[in-house]
Image (cartoon, rainbow, N blue to C red; front, side):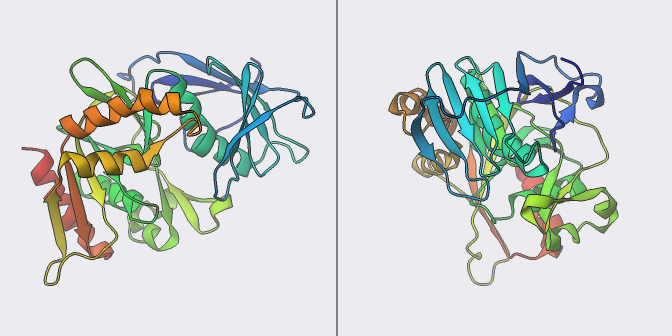
Length: 317
């Protein structure tokens, strides 16, 4: 491909005809990074928009993602007018950006909504979570949108030096003896107030157009793309901690873990119950094997170093 941009995402190499925001290029990865296990090609494609297609599902949200089936291909459409035609192997994606052409909003929509679903066509699952590399292994931060996952991830990096492995979508692959996490990027998406909490890194932040006052904050260190064993999960609850407490960390049972993992799971096609049956045993295994803690703390940026030290004491024993 001429003018190709090459990235690494979730253990895969992405060859793209366009620049993709927030992903690490292969040339920027650390020398000890693991080789990619497969390629996904994103290329220009002339779409026959009159071709028969069957609506599968639409997701609410700013990107207006909709999934269709058309013969041997899947179609992901965005509200920007772009369409991504995916072959049944997930290895080739043809994109028609529409009359408006390739835009920052279309690129963000592909990286944040389409790519996490396409990569599932391999033998992995995807969770809406921030992932960190601790000395003991990978740590996931889960919770609803707005719970503070990215802000805490940036705080863990600033306080402890833990690497950010994924900001929004975490790719997991079950192995015979462990669950591996494959990095997807090294930055965090922070709202304006959160960005100002890290003044030394403010110059590294760039505004994400489609979010208005949200910024992509990127640590100076490069990303290692080798997979990391998953050792712990924290579920961030937006409810304040009990009275007279500023930080609480409570252990959870398997039912709690499975419930919240299933809520945070990114699904390729929720309308396909067969896929649900395939992924359920994976989430059940994660719930049984990986400890999950419910984390509550007052929404104050000055508490982030203390929260980080509490997590470090628990994870790195």
